[in-house]
Length: 311
Ligand code: G3H
Ligand code: 13P
Ligand code: NA
Ligand code: ZN
Image (cartoon, rainbow, N blue to C red):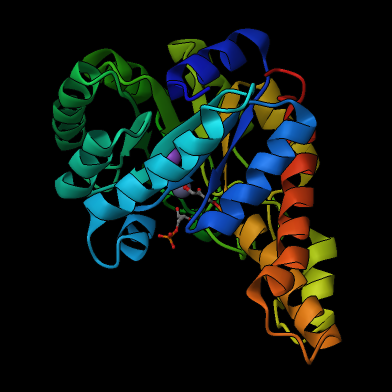
């Protein structure tokens, strides 16, 4: 069924596991994610960025959002596993309202680059509108940036736990993304991977709510190697190792945002297939290997985070 993201995350919070939230831009990634969710009997959170809404709608975010809702609902309505659709990093009022209008299960309001009081005010406004429509809300505190890159200024970059408590009381958001040292993309750490576990622990103790880890891709070595065997150059790429992810779940993370790992798996499969089948040009065929690798990464992640058999 198609469900509210809040329901998926409150159960995860009570039972100490995390649900991956997978970013999509098109049908093929959705198909691969759904296959993984069915195989693992796991709840799923599908998310799209504002960029994805614009891309799918050919410049019209409401049209893009409506297409995503239709696609996701078509699967969700006919399947036993709970599936939610979330707007990731909503920054513009127009996009957030479009997602709510179109029927998303939840939206993120990301005003984390604004001063605290302004973040609170903006977030409150969105919470009021979203909750009236039965849509739950995620917000973010702190900035996504590697700890190594910001040694001197980590206090102002990473989440402040006392601020987090104040923020959630003021805004009434349903889940919170505290910055603890991750970053988006395939190049997260220059040296050793390192997150601020103490900070995460404090935020959980003070808020007790479902927490979100952004920039959580692991940069799966197997996929990097396949892609590089067939011409890619992903030199210097580094993600969040599995054992560190597991520790964040133990400390209270319930939603694990994952985009980069799926993109890399897809391109690995696409490159491999095209290299091995130079005469092929049927998209259903050249996307099959790509989708199979995305599904593998999805399944492994659902297992790792503990949401397998929680549907
Ligand atoms: O948070 C960023 C996500 O990976 C989506 O990125 O804006 O390129 O779609 P995007
Ligand atoms: P990755 O780039 O690590 O996959 O992070 C995705 C994300 O945080 C989307 O909001
Ligand atoms: Na999000
Ligand atoms: Zn993110």
